[in-house]
Length: 502
Image 1 (tube, helix red, strand yellow):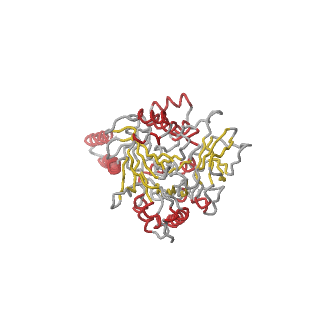
Image 2: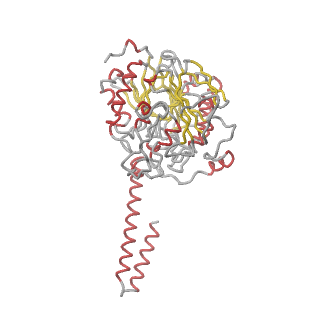
Image 3: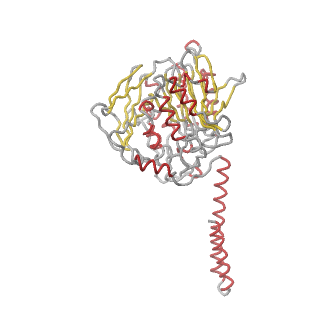
């Protein structure tokens, strides 16, 4: 501490007055201590500057007592799961050009599994990070409607929406439950752990729900312990739905950016294997539909981790169509020029597949903390519309992000029609008033609607029981939108007659 350095400095100079015949060693020691004091002050200044500039507060370095109590009762996240534990399934849409019916089915476990009733083409221990886990995955053809699978003796029903029919799903961003790594200011106040799990488990009892998406900074988790505290407690009804994951700055560097990177950071490597998406990396040799991730960047090869992101942007670039909505998601940690050809391919697919709307999903709304100017979500939205391959999407290309921990309509055009949406308040603090909520997309009934549900906030107070009570009583969020703010409500036209050929 600074006080210890000052005390040492005083002692040395006290010694100097008693040993005036030998001043040089004492002065040398004093110089060392002065340098230590200077280094400490500089580090403190940088830490405080970054915290103020980026609205990030340092964590406690310890997991909360309630988490230790939970783990003591139910087992630590890194312990092998009980035999009767629910399957850790991941369902993701296949990359668009592979065909609408392509679906990736994956399983996360603590050991290699080999089932007689279901064949996984990929069966490997996680590489580089979160290596206590094993990933099993396969890309398969499913038919529109209900598809009954049997995995390890368990029945799993995957509902693939009919192409061009409406879909429903929920978006989160920046969810936090623990202050170990970064201060989760409102996690306990808003009861994010219990309420977020209970809300999802309740909402996804509704058979009309199709997907769930998290837009980055997924639990502020370097080691996977927090993530694996959440997911096993999500119901089978949540985990059989399509999952869309976005990579955020804290998913790469738990402190928030490359300036403070350490060798223990995740760099999105454990994260991408845990969420198991089908991405653009899978169509770039030597990858394929079996070995679908690019592991060529090794975070432990001695590189400068503050200047080199040890991952590939194509591992996070997803694009596909689900029902009548197109999705394009990416990591802002990648380089725009490297990603531009893949953005062009994504747009070509989305123009050809003619969804009613395309959602550009990312994390960063600002060029900071590992994201360049051209890779923020608003900037990529603008760049895409300037590209020949994407321009035909025009005003049907909307975007959604987080990073700033607020929930609001982020951008409107000259006619005051909204096209950008932020959903980053889910336990963290920021410049806005304390908020905790989620976004519900409903593209059924010939319209595309975004309904924002504020679960708790400074302004509106605690509305959790009112919202979850309505869902329980009436069977779904679509019956409770009177409790939400409608951020978007537009006609979901058949776009085949409206697209400009390029």
